[in-house]
Image 1: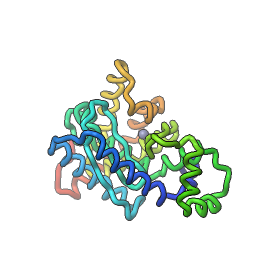
Image 2: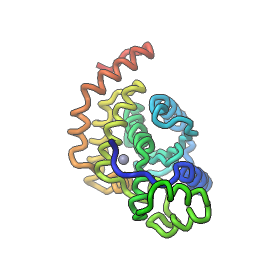
Image 3: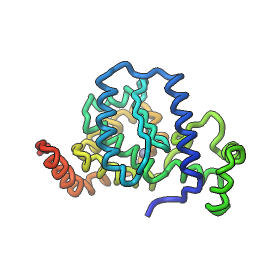
Image 4: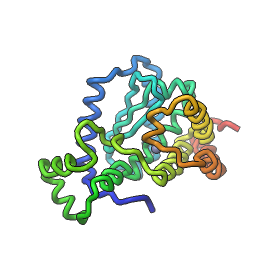
Length: 243
Ligand SMILES: [Zn+2]
């Protein structure tokens, strides 16, 4: 069971995300670090391979933006951005980057942006009626413009996720990364780094991904199960798991 109801058309959001992501690529600095770009494409391919069952037919795209803020996001429709500052905070540790990408992809799988927007717009209509309205582009734009989701905001980043959505993403993201053969314990080491940083400055990532309280404890409570899946995935890859 997941939190909230997604009433906006997934196709519409995917289309809108696609054009917003393109605008970001045109207007913002893309990292020239080829190994960072190769890393997130590799991680993305492995994690979406696992998540594909929840998101069939998604056209995934992974881009590293040259920005110091340790941030990452995934938009409906499979557009994923990772800031260079996040890879640096992770010290280039691919398992930690995978923990973040797993978490972001889980938000997409749960349609969390759609649910947050649906909620923010205070839509009281039935899903059928709204979906019919959404087929008409101009009326859907009117609807979107009338809600909290206005011009200048970005799909997937307009609204902070709720604590329960964060928990869902933490939970599923942990299993996505483990099943993709990434050490799930890296989620804990990464969030510890993030917390250390938070003491100095509140990064944007934490304002759109509020800390659901005992996040690290929650991750730890699922770690035994995740570790078993990780070992299985590593063995299937013919690689040895971290002890
Ligand atoms: Zn999140």
